[in-house]
Image (cartoon, rainbow, N blue to C red; front, side):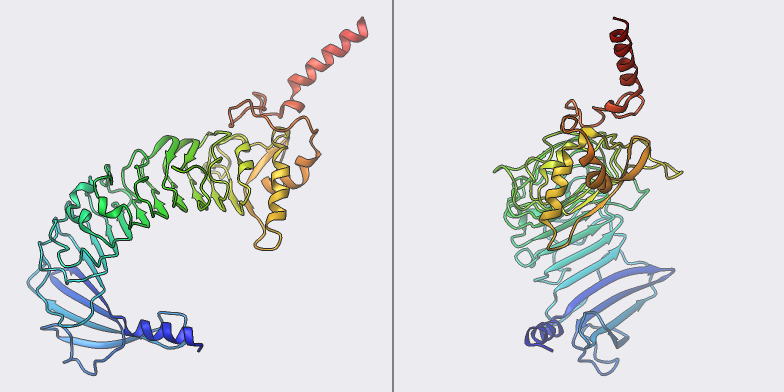
Length: 431
């Protein structure tokens, strides 16, 4: 084992993680403590908590090294029925790092119940509607990551302690599971000034947000996850200059107009996942501010044409542009590649050259070209370059169907155009 790996492994073994889970099964309630790290206990009598009835070591390979990691399990059984608040405990001088909780609490208890100097807090609490301001007393300067799942909390202002943290980097407030009609509708962050220069990850998945929240004040934000909300209509938003990853999957966005940044073009924005949205239009300037984008997922769109705005993505490596399909796995809309998009062949050739020495390109999706169906990549690589030079480059500003006749034929091969040509020829012949 090299020195770096050995140092890392030693560090992991010396790190103890406390995981507290409250569960209810029938009439039995148990508290479950899990310590990850070295296993110093030899018998069931040496638990670090009071009143525990069993203690044992469990060995599992939790990392990529050959050595085993070790865990200590201590269960405290109680026949008095479901718990309504955290149990009393004393953990002595153990360095507690993570506190995880599963319960049906309507509110978390006040100060004194959460161990001090916690770095992570995780709660799957289906009844949690507010978090008291003093619950995290003792951990506001050390807390780095908070995860709250399944809470019916409607406003982030109900998280009273949020403005007190000074070291928080990750905030995950994931809404109720599929079919549970509750979740955040208000996530105004401007008043939580202590977070503006610390948060790097913000996760509001599976809530009820109808628009993209203002995050421009979060100067260090790198990842924003808004999957599975109710965001609808036009995507036109400004994001922090620091943002790298944006998740907008499973919303109701119909138009991509612009992604902008306070200081102009972003040189760090590298991933946009906007799949499974009913997108029907992409502005020609939609991607002007994100030229360094590396991965774009638009799978499940409702477009009828290949967006010319793609030409602005000069570093793109991955593109998923498969159209939405019905229950019979047939495209909901005719997604076409025509000679109107021939200008994208130059863009594609430049991308091939850009990535020839690294990962290559990963393009996914099919389109119709005339009467044939082919991959978008095959059109850009083989058919597009054959188009007349004066055919490509315009989509009459619409981005979602310009350049295609009402019957779905490319303009240059439409039966309507052929008819007019025949009439003109006959007139010339008669004259």
